Length: 313
Image (cartoon, rainbow, N blue to C red; front, top):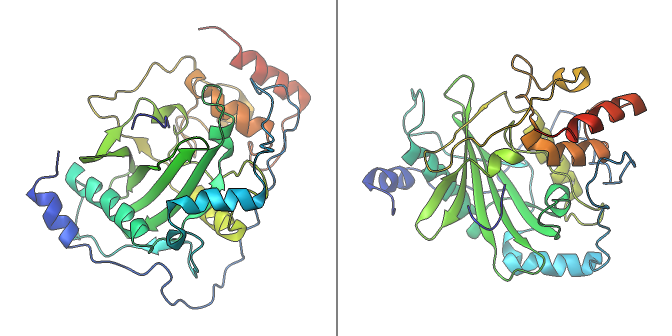
């Protein structure tokens, strides 16, 4: 998702928001019975040669300076106590909805932002690996990521800034679960509210929300929460990407047809196909050993992938 560039809503939006009362981020819950998620492995390059730039070590960040920088968003909004990693949203006003309206989607985005601003979300705070390794930005990217859900949506809020910015930017994702497959909406918050985005977000989010991968093991404020939110993201259903008229699907380039990738990323697989447009996250996630999720690619497979990534359109 590009960072720098993500009407007052109609009466229907106001009515919908009024029907979504506040919730508590850390509501009482019985002790979890499932196995706690494994903590996210440290981001260490495996030396594949896939990265366009050397891995950033971020020596300017001690854990103390990192925590101080993250707290500028408002210390009361982060490091929240929690029993569940995902905040439960109120039931949807239309119980039989088959496809949410764009006003309803925006209302959920506004609700997520409102909960965060009131200190009622449970955000993961980290320096994100993907944006840190971005071949264009190449700056540490500070993130607060919070997850929300009810029976009709999965929603995420991303509050983000580069290490040199002063203010924080807000972005949101809402997955409409009333459709099969679900439909993913991405938006940047502007002065007028959420503005749907597609073209730039699709570069890294072809399969929906990305798992959390901190750039350094000590640059995440709550490692168990990061692992729990990442597991929630990994369990998301196969979905489709919403492209608004003013932000259409960009040229994708060639599809990734290598068998060790298409086992998961294909037209009839668990995740959407990948294209040359997604070269950046492919390079990063494979080099740091996060993809494939259950093994490391063999040297011959790395060579195949590298040749495909370097192929000119």
